[in-house]
Image 1 (cartoon, helix red, strand yellow):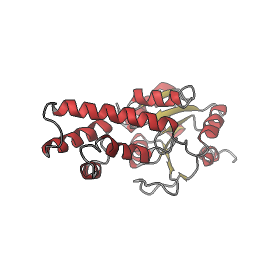
Image 2 (image 1 turned 120 degrees about the horizontal axis):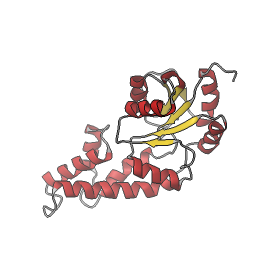
Image 3 (image 1 turned 180 degrees about the horizontal axis):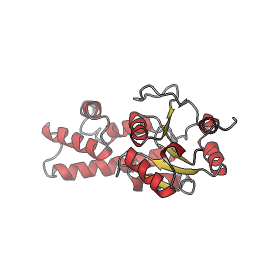
Image 4 (image 1 turned 120 degrees about the vertical axis):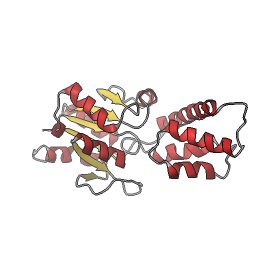
Length: 224
C-alpha cells in the first residue's frame, strides 16, 4: 500500500519550467542581449543548479570583458543568483498550477497519504513559493537542492517509516526518475503533451495530475 507521495515542483505541480529557463536570459540581457552566452551555458550544463549556472554565466561574461572587473567572480555569481531567485519567485508565485493540482492535493490529503516536495530548487525559496500559493500546509516536509533527489527520498523514508515500495515519486525530468530508481521507490512520470522531458522509458505515466489517484490505487492493488 502506498503511504507517501513525493512531488517534484517545477513542471509537476506548477507550469514553471519555461519561466525558469527564460529568467536566465532575462537577468543578463543588458550584457548578453543575443542570449548566446546563456544558451551555451544551459546547453553545456543542463543539470547544474541555479548557483552553478549563474557562476558559469558570470565566468563566461567576465572572460569576454562584458562584466565590470570592479567585482569579483564570486560577487557577480552571487548577484546573478540572487537576481535569478527574486525574478523567478515573483513569476512562479503567480504562474498557472498544473491542471488538477489543487484538486488532487486535496484528494490525496483526504486519502491520509503523507505528501512531500522533492525539488531541485533550494528549500527556502521553495518554502516561500509554497506559502505564496497557499500550499505550505499541504506538505509534511519540503526537500530541496541542498541534497540529491535519492537522498531526499531516503530522508522521507526515515521520517515516515515507510518502505521504498510504499513511496511514489512524481516528476517530469530525468533527475526525478534517477532519484526514484536509485532509492528504489515507484516513479510516476508527469509528461504533458507539450513538455520537453529527459525521462527515459518508464511504465507509469500520467499526462494530467487528475490521473494520479486512480494510478496510486492500481499500484496499491486497490479497485479503481
